[in-house]
Amino acid sequence: MTPVELSRTVLRAVRRAVEAGELGVVVPGRAVVTVPGAGGCGDYATNIALELARPAGRASRQVAEILRPYLRGAPGVADVAITGPGFLNISLDQAAVTRTLVSEVLRHGSRYGHGDALAGQVVELRVPYDTRAEVVADTLVRIVGTQGGRAEVRHAEPVNLRPVPAPEDPALLGSDAARWALLHPAPHDRPRITADHLVQRESNPLFRIRYAHARTRALSRNAAALGYTGAPGDLRDTAVTQSLLAALADHPRVLTAAATHRSPDRLARHLVTVADAFLGHQHTVLPLGDEKPSAAHRARLAFAEAAGAVLAGGLSLLGISAPEHL
Image 1: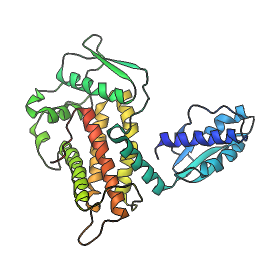
Image 2: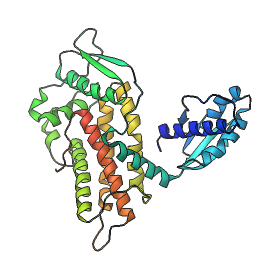
Image 3: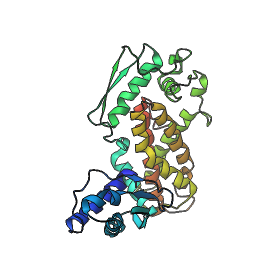
Image 4: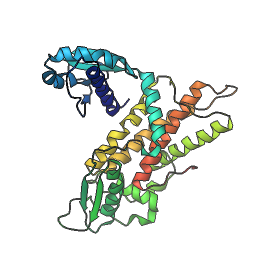
């Protein structure tokens, strides 16, 4: 469950309390959900009870006590504790969180993580006549679009998007490697235009991303040949599982940050994180030897396919192809 989803869960709890006549307030448009602060506990915390205390005419801790049972009964929530003056500290049911997250990624596919953080906004990108600036701007048009905004690119002064230029023409690398060479470094870093971006080995992050995506597609094909498909379910809790779960859950935040800070390099680095986490998981997906496909294998395959959807969507936003075979 992402913070955005948990925020909706908190608002549903408020709405149910209002409908039951336990709170006399107007349901707010949003609920802030963050990691617990000092003295907190659980996975996330919200100050919604403190915000509603005055309009409800009650102490904030009383409001928290009213909301607590509604939150406790919500899907994906294991427990709710009240700390301080009325902070609601939420512990998640990790198995339910995993199923929900994988289901959401697969439902949205390459559009997972798209939101409305920039809805209705026009982002003007004024760039110099420079290859890197133009590639960054072209990419930002798509990334800003994922958050409901519209980016307009112009060659005009004063320039407001001027990444450090490439030291030489990247065209010789080919489209995919050239774009990666220009987009992966932070804007203030000078890009490396070298053949390292073309080598098919682990030292090349672009290769790892594209190889990871191709492996997700291969796993789907191999599973189909064995007679089963992916289905979100419980996953064995390992460091690798948690690493990939965290990377997938973080994808919406990364897209928002890349759009608002005009930094496609954040998305590029995030895809490396997703790919590396997936490559540690891939060997668990298919049955081994005489092992028969089970619910666990279907859950692991769905998990892999979710990673593939994030990788494909991210590469598409960067303007880089996501091969089915590699």
